[in-house]
Length: 338
Image (cartoon, rainbow, N blue to C red; front, side, top):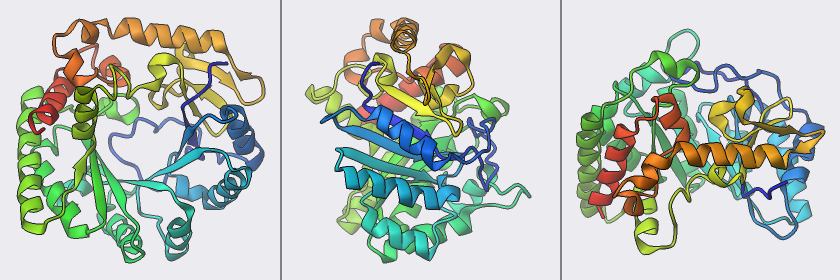
């Protein structure tokens, strides 16, 4: 097998929310067993090699006991594993917050704008908004001085209100970074409208401008994932497609049943199946998937701006029929704010 740099582990396909754009909505809702989780990590870790392990779902905090046990196992082994948790924030209880205070996780919380905006996209099954519960969870972390990143899914419905998300991030007080994730049209995302390139361009310009104003007023600067990536590419510290380990066959997503796929966006797609926990990762499938992704992104490589932007997301381009205009606008907005 090709050694992995990143493993995304779907601890459960189940979720307490029903977000309108969820690309993972069709995942199996089972909860991963302890034996399955341990075997997946054992398989992914290469002796002495660093690995990023992202705990995901569904909503991973529905499998909180498994998170605690898996974390203890990894720390006991003293492996160079960086653990990240991507959560909707609504299940960050006092108990969970106490655990996260000592767990040394990177924590990402999904939030798409101020409550009125967020609640149109991120909802409970009954249609009620999730903002109040998510903000309560974030504040429990803030009380414990735990910094977080916000992940915002950008659609046609919230692209003109991203400056409001920046204001909310400053209000919360413990947001260290904001990352923007353009709509992926897999799963329920097929029913939503992506933001146009022009809307992305103007929406991000306002967001970055508002962030600069608030940084001057407060003396505190929230970082933006896209801007940091642009700096890394411009400085030569990162090369083209460095953000996509799938491009080199070095990432995998393992679902609750123990099946490996090259990317979280393609769980269940046989083209991107690369093995399972019982039989191991299939190196020939890893290489074939990586080659398919590279060849599909030739348009990026041929673009005169490729050296500055580092390339688009294959999953997003695939869902948009190969057109990356909105992501190009996103990358150019980030480059312009340097």
